[in-house]
Every structure is written in structure tokens, then in C-alpha cells.
Length: 344
Image 1 (cartoon, rainbow, N blue to C red):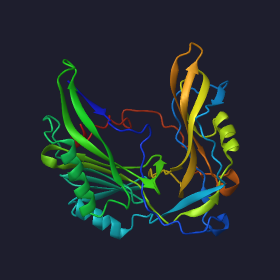
Image 2 (cartoon, one colour; image 1 turned 120 degrees about the vertical axis):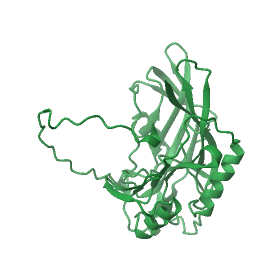
Image 3 (spheres, rainbow, N blue to C red; image 1 turned 45 degrees about the vertical axis):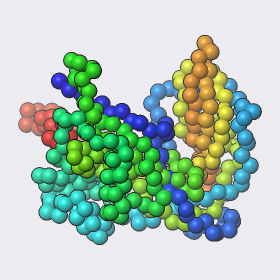
Image 4 (cartoon, rainbow, N blue to C red; image 1 turned 90 degrees about the vertical axis):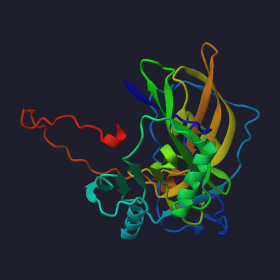
């Protein structure tokens, strides 16, 4: 009996994507923005209860930010048109494949390859002929080179992306925990904008298998236009929002005190296929440590949107109509679905 374990060797708590060198020649005047509405960031929900009665304290090392404007970056080319579909099918040698429409996208599949192209242009690819038994005998540096060459050759490396860590997919014997093999090495590519980190649900991952084969590609990012100036919240307002848990906050449920040691302005992008975010947006990023009633220390991290609510519109959730429940009978009970062979 074997179980698959992924060991991620990345420096960031939250996976980040970054791109460098965008021309922000627009004057820092929020009135110069386009008329496209900015959809408010819909932060992911972190599991577990968050404490409410917490004492927040700013460490003397936490420099207060005094900035009134920043930039938002509108997404562009957010539709998987026929040209993109043809290109991806050619890259992954899946021209002659059956297609099946799914929620927010289309699946293309044959005996050798699986390709899901989402409506927004993001995609996931799997090679079905994956070796799940042998230990991969390729160095991290060699895998990085293979992944870079693949993305560059096929014009899948957006400007400014860089390699930011290697993860190992391993298989370990349940009978002997020391019997472990590295099956694949996943090369992560991350993004910055003008040397500022972009956090969020956004990534490019190339999974390298036996003999340097491309086993999988996860491509979840979008092209962005030139930055447009926007007014941002004062630091004090963002701090109050943090205390009210209005953004995304990570701390232990037993926390009694938070000491904020660092505050920075970063960016947030969510290119998951079901997300309705329209721009890469500035966020306040809080870092520090926590203390519980026993004096034990922990890690604190928080993200608060920097764009005021009056300059954004809320996410429009789709209307979901309820359907009547159908009693289970022998004729309508479906057998459990098996995983595809290439993902077992």
C-alpha cells in the first residue's frame, strides 16, 4: 500500500506570482483610471476559528506607511478564444482529442494526454503516461532548466516571471516510512510587479518526471495592462480593518496578543477559474508574532485590501436555484467514480 505525499519547498506561506518591469508612466492621479469597475477582492477563507478579543500592538520596528495612492492593474486577454485553444492543443500534442464542456471550461482528452482549458485562458495539463514507481534521477537545477526552456519555447512565460522554488512529489510505503521515492519535481514560477510581491491564488507550476518528461503543467495567471493610479486607505483605517478581521488573517485560535513587526504594501491576484477579480490590487500585508495566555509564540499574517470599498464593487455571486431532492433507488444510485489511471 502506498500513499502520495507532496513536500513543498517554497519560501512563501502563500503561493505568490510576480512580474517585473511594467511601465507606470501615468501620473499618480486616481482620476486617470479607466472606467472599468474594480471588483472587490474576495479573500479565501482559512479554516479554523479566529479569536476576537485580541490585543494588537505595533512593534517599534514596524514602520508606519504614509502613502495615499498606489496602482491597480486590469486583467487583459481573459478569454480562451479559438487561437489560444489551438495553440495549447498543439503544444501538448492533443489536436485529435475528444472535447467535453465542463463548468467554466472545456476538457480535451485522448489516450495519452489530458488538457483542461478554462474559459478565462488558465489551464491544467497532465501526461497520462506517468511513472509512479521509479525514483526520479534528475537534479533540481536540471529540472529548473527543463521547465524554463519549456515555458520559454512555447511562449508560456509571461514577462518578469522567475523560478521560485522546487517541490517534491513523493511516494512512501505505509509499511516502511523510510522507504520513500521522489516521483516528480515541481518547479514553481512566481511574479512581482516593479519588485513588489504579488500574493494570492496564482501560479505557474511545471512538474518534471522520469527522463525529463513534462508530466503536468498548472498555468493560473493572467496578462495585465499598465498600472492605473488609485487612492488607497490610510494605514490607520487598514489597521482597524485588520482588528475587525475584514481581510484574510492567519493566527492560532488561542491567540491573546498580536505584535505586528512589519507592514508593507503588496499586490493581490486571484486567477483561479471561478474567481471574478478584475484587477491586480494593492493590499496591506501585516506580519508579526502571536502570544497565547501561556506565553507560547506563534506566527501572525494578515492581508487587508488597500482600495477603499467606495471605489470597488462587490463580487456578484451567481443565482443558484434549488432543485428538489430525488429519493435514492436502485435505478438512480450511481457507483463511485474511479480516479483516471494517470492520476492514481
